[in-house]
Amino acid sequence: MLDDIKKTLWATADKLRANMDAAEYKHIVLGLIFVKYISDPFQTRRAELTHKFADTSDDYFLGEVDQAQLHAELEDRDYYREVNVFWVPEAARWETLRAQAKQADIGKRIDDALSLIETENPKLKGILDKRYARVQLPDGKLGELVDLVSQIGFGESTDTAKNHARDLLGQVYEYFLGQFASAEGKRGGQFYTPASIVNTLVSVLAPHHGQVYDPCCGSGGMFVQSEKFIEAHGGKLGDVSIYGQEANPTTWRLAAMNLAIRGIDFNLGKEPDDTFVRNQHPDLRADFVLANPPFNISDWWHGSLEGDPRWVYGTPPQGNANYAWLQHMLYHLKPTGRAGIVLANGSMSSSQNTEGDIRRAMVEADKVEVMIALPGQLFFNTQIPACLWFLVKEKRARQGEVLFIDARKLGSMISRVQCEFTVDVIERIAGTVAAWRDGGAEYADVAGYCRSVTLEEIAEHGHVLSRGGMSEPRR
Image (cartoon, rainbow, N blue to C red; front, side, top):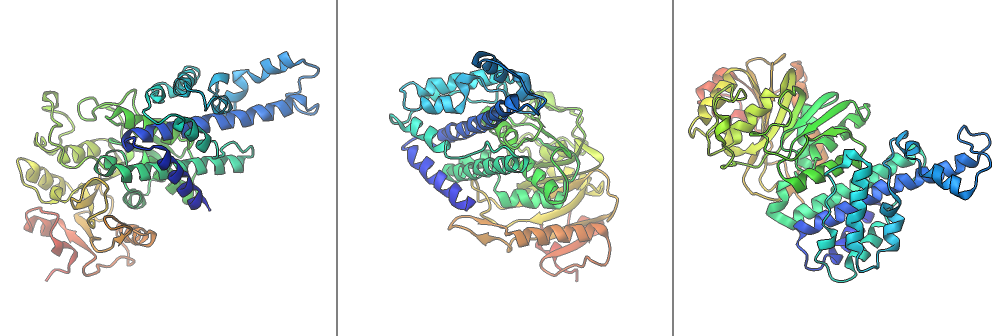
């Protein structure tokens, strides 16, 4: 049922965009969904208060009041903020915008509404993208889009219904992100990591508590999946603290909205910025760090990074940021912390400039825990084969060993050009890693799939981590 709703909404929204570039259109659609989410709980709370004010048995009972007094009470911000509902000014409420949807200046009215919402809710300052007055859509299409978003209901009053409504919106938002990423192709991968990769990272890391950090967070998918993991394993929203950074301003806003609509508290830094040059969380030491950075960035270096304390295992080459990301993530781990990162396969074997030396130093220091080789065609934006690195600050078990998993043949094609991991495959991989970490009889090497390899054997292979033979029994 929900899948049908999402597909129908997407098909209609996609039809309305006409010839507009998907990269631009996504901000229009997702921004409207966010405003609808902000407004619906406000209206629900308002209706609830109206009932309470008239109920003689309720602590909120007002007694005999005229309409002006009732209206003044209903406009008291404290009633909304005490239950963590965003205050929405009258001109910014969804029913107001919907009533104006057919007006020629609806774009400007939406921009004005967003400005009002930001003014009243400092937490949202700078998050909302005010571009509706400049939208290049055929006449009437923006109004039709407002009508379409109006069909999604987020304002139920019971706690269970509220959670369902929030989850519904979150799923619609996430589905649209994925569809826009697919529509944008290569560019889409800059803000969206395919769900099966995120799920694999999160399932292996198992972030059940503490601080979770993503230094290049895109639209926030790693955080959302971390919260889902926690709730699926008996935890609750708030068991983790979310920290992130994102350089692209529009993507930074997408992430903030993605987290806000799910009720997830977050700290994405005071502004979008470069993670290496202007680190927004310099003192953070996290329990879990996970990321899907752009592969093989060549223009990342800045002179101020010379001698940076993050380069514990060697200064990364100026022409490739892969080993800068690895060391940045290690630097931000607590002593008991774990990290997972998606990188191009070349990171496992490259010896260009200082990369081979850095990798050797990391392996010899026993910072590499698990290596997973991925199938091709997992990403929207590149066909470059990729891998997952899992790092630890301090190994408590399996010291002097690295687990290699060959998952290159475990993907399932979902279209002519893209594959994914099924839930069963993700559970198998996560279960294999968990059994290996436990160090008991539950784990055993499996030819062609997984093998625990000593640091001595890795050294014999020149500290190259990509050899297919690593997952084969040693002869």
